[in-house]
Image (cartoon, rainbow, N blue to C red; front, side, top):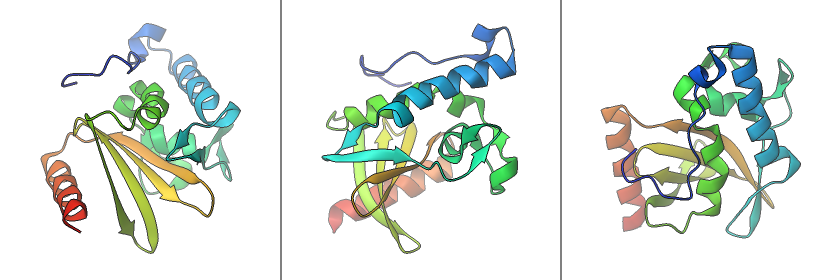
Length: 160
């Protein structure tokens, strides 16, 4: 990570669990559970909640969106880079005033979303709800076309 802020926790790595996927994903979930189910963070004075309406393998849909990828809700593919950074989501939200985080809003379909982009390397997407934000997903932005698209979207939002 380019100039990682001091408030960002260390990555959790699969090798720290001797490659034991079950222990690893349970640890990642315990971090997510602590950060978004036991006590939610606030962003711009409103709570940030995760999607809890669907449970897969004993874990909320919001968790799987932050640790895996794919269009099929019940059969997403684990993404180790997302898993490693599960502990980053809450601190980024709580430190959103740090200059290393770009923030903007844009509509996706008919929903207003807020984007928090850490050092142009890690993106958090929040959906706007009536009286809270919903954590939609979080992922690394390491593909050039994704970075270019996000840069353009950020620039458009600042020009409006």
